[in-house]
Image (cartoon, rainbow, N blue to C red; front, side, top):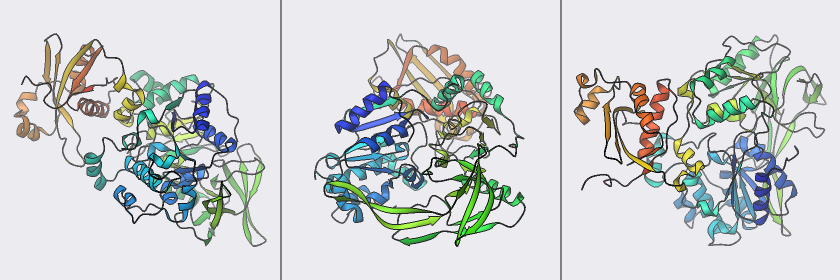
Length: 555
């Protein structure tokens, strides 16, 4: 286990963990969140279970997926959990004896899932009827990294039942009950302060033009890693990764060797860390998925297969690591367990096994699967664009230095996708000191209806507290029929109107030191920010203050 560097924030987090208090542990990538959790697990006497929203995240912390731990099916709802028909199943007794639940990669936990966890603990936890069943809940993660996944069919449910899909919008989440400790010291890029600064700007979605140009000096579209170096490509989608790995494997000479996994016992709900059928060749670049007892490699170490053989009926790989050493890797058996309470302590009972060579092809992996990784040689390929907030930040923040980072495509403003609702929550801006000046902001949009809508401002208006006001039409360059039908604005009206970047360049200086207020004002500013980035412009965007509908009218 890596040594834990004690900072004031980490000391505060450890105090809260041992006190039994709930905790929201957050921080930028590489600040030691996972190391702190591992230290707590190794030193505490509390009965702790670790859970995570995905199988990969659960394996990384030797825990369980939330759905497996609580017996949730994909179709389980909060009403189901509150009803008399729900039971956690095989883990009921363990949940009854639980003292602490650590939820890792909490940025991906949906609000409704956290409510389901609370309802399950309230019914089956050690103190029935109390919030969270009397269990200490520790939420660990960076909300500006990968977000919860909400399908199109679920979007309407969230619009009507929750303020956002993020965990802090869960009805069971009270900010005062979950003290926040934000880790600030970045250890991953220690010694490369400039990269750390650039990553901070990417994380917050405000990578301005000069900084973006500096980051894009790392672009090399034709880059091919040297044969004697191990570079890992991160890409947004499974299809790109699968294609890249298949192409690189096919380029190697010889026939591929196939290795099939073996299962035994109860493996229901277990998400295997690697494919049930592996295809490998000598020369293949792979990622090892276990921690070696002799510390020769760890989960996530890259290597190259230099030989394969069958020894005593089992396939073994000789793998050359980055330092030139060669290690022999045989099949590994993952134990499928369930937590049990025995004599007042919490332990694990093995209920099944999954045996496979502990590796996967790794010329490329998805950005999602890279979370938690630290990479000295990293290629980021954004072919096809990004589809989730935080993806670019997660990818870039795996790098330890600028020298070890290559971009296949330039970082563009449209890639800097952040959720302003999360930024507001993390900044605590709701409770900030009131500014000296306010201004009412109104924005009319076209093209803002439908699942695949792309809202474009067609009119901006600001009324200041001294009685002055500024307004302008904006040329949206499309959806003009929508503009005429909804607002009576014709193509002739916007023919000579400024574009959004031109209009905002005039408006932004007027808003300096002023807080915008309005109905759904932050939603409007988020749409303006998104459209500006689509048009290749990145500007700092203020937070607004929400007012009730009709509060700004003269009635």
